[in-house]
Amino acid sequence: MTRRAAATAVAAYGPAPVGIGRAATLALYDELALSPKPGLVTLVDQGSHDDMDAQTFMRSLFALRRYFGLIAAAGFEGAEFGELERLGIEAEARMLAATSGVNTHRGAIFMLGLLCASAGAVARERDGIARPAELRDALQRHWGEALALRSQRVSTLPGGIAAQRHGLRSASQEAAAAFPVVFETAVPALSSALARGLTPQQARLDTLFHIMAVLDDSNLAHRGGMAGLRHAQRSAQRYLDAGGAAAPGGLRRAESVARDFVARRLSPGGAADTLSAACWVVRVCALA
Image 1 (cartoon, rainbow, N blue to C red):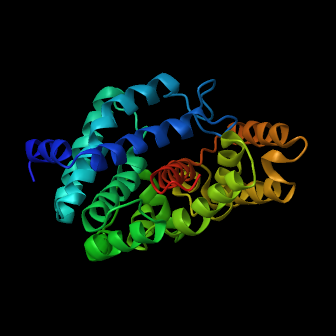
Image 2 (cartoon, rainbow, N blue to C red):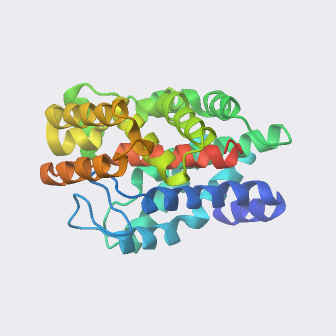
């Protein structure tokens, strides 16, 4: 499907692809606006990064906003994986042009893009609000084989190289397994926290720590080796064991973890992408 055909599909199919894409942009902003976040860029600080700040992320968001609707429309059309990959490559080029070469959202382009395509496929196949299990099923049925083949490629990106070096499950392997950390850890944690009455910020903060505790985050392995990754996982689990964001002193403990990550130059970028994906699933599936 050409770019013009995809744009026509967005208009022709009514609110489904447009709403799916808008939810993705909002989810990326949800992640950016969350603070404190260990080592990650927020609206008020740069975390462990010298080359990006909130303005960099906002330029990236503006450049990507159309992509998510286009890839949702491609999923609605039943596009082959090669078409989804082409849309993602074009989106990455627009991101890099908007950020002067800084990688703000490469992982989110991949993860959220695939999820938007899956939601488009579900919208074609049935009416009504999608359920998380249906999104996973659509991803596996339509593009699971292609994703399995893609996961066997040798990566030339820093995170992929770190995953290969340390025997971690890469982002491509997560996708080939239909994003188990998104659907089995992040979405249940976020929807449960919201159902218990936590504020959106508290719920997202706890969800981020739930993700960090279990994810093979190759960004952490790239920056800090296996020692850095395991330190981050242990820190996240200790935070949760102490009661998380809603416990007395929860925000101060999160700030302390954030300072520690900055001192160690750790940044859980994979966890940030996964949090965005969870925010998107909760919004699209009306779980909040």
